Length: 280
Image 1 (cartoon, rainbow, N blue to C red):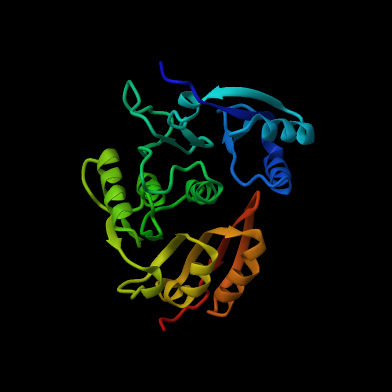
Image 2 (cartoon, helix red, strand yellow; image 1 turned 120 degrees about the horizontal axis):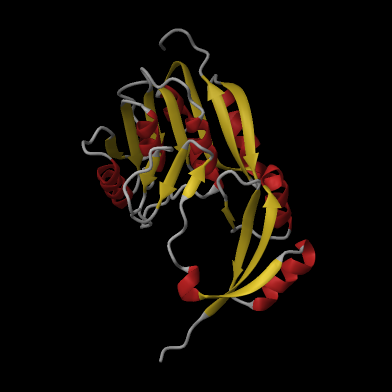
């Protein structure tokens, strides 16, 4: 019989209204990887951190309270539960029985080699912004660094008809295209393998999403802004709070106006608008 390997889990039920407070406390404690399980209609969410050794979990318990339990590795590595963004959209990773539910839009994103399951803070902030959009008529969307395609697919699910999504990784583009086939009968999104730093705009978009590393966002600012239509909006994520001023400065230099900075733990999402009224 094979030996059963175990990991240790620290877990704490938190008030969802204080989510950022608790994630910030984990950041101070040196914890950068965690999971947050939301329950529909419930105020309390489950915050968890996994450790290879019991001592790490116990040390965190002494700092923040909570509970420590042993988890078999085969249980720990099961596919993640569905990610639900309020009442707006649900991201599932396993095929659901009984077909799609009628009360909430759903996307099926199998866990695989491409980044983007919806449960990371950088992706989650962008998904929430997309979910709050009221009017998708006439929307043109450019998704840079698409990964699994989750943001482009969410925009399509919400009603966008013109979407282009790019990634530097050819495998990610292939996976994203497959994910569109998992969710829609006919293709609509234009998937491209491209380096954002070498982006050559052939069109302008009124909404650009870019979930990329801070250094890439700052370096590629001129190319990204060239793809933004007058009056268009740019939403950046993947930015650490410690690096946000560098990124903000790069886009202010390109003439954009800063609209809002939203934070989740150590991550921020930055929103800009192109105030130009005339084509360059």
